[in-house]
Amino acid sequence: MFRLFRGCVLFAVFHVIFAQGQFPPSLPPNIPQKCLGPPPAVEKPHECCPIPPFFTDEDFADCGFQKLDDSDPDAKPRGPPDCSKQLCMLKKYELLNEDEDIDEEAITKFLDDWAAKNEEFQAAADAAKQRCIGKNLFGPPQICEANKIVFCVSSTIFDKCPTWQETEGCTTLRTHMDDCRPPFPN
Image (cartoon, rainbow, N blue to C red; front, side, top):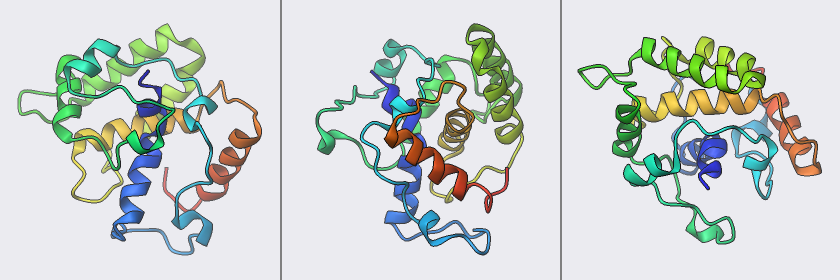
């Protein structure tokens, strides 16, 4: 239902960055040309890694996320979700502090609890905590911190996926991800 959101936030953010021609000011040097654009087309990239849900469908609906229809490519939203929607989700799960800033301790506990229920994803959750918590997160300044943390966690778990599907499209996507990872800091 909301698998596209969970698995493809990475692709939406890259699409926004590259479609607007606004590169983050600190892109690493010597990036291969193929890594400056979106990854190769995969019909349903979210199916490459079946990630267990972080949030309930009801919470997504309560926060204004609309169910995505895989059969209608024109219905897919462009760019990252409205920050108010991400803030709503983070508030529902008490992942913000009183000032509505990211609560790093709460997110760490949330990921620990999620990984305890989804043991095969423990290493991926640990990588997400290391890469995303307490860091200056990647992305253009117009993307809010709530979107950046959700993007960082979901894309890290997607990247470190223990249940990766070995279809032709997923293998092509994995190769692209592996080839384009080295220039970017962890």
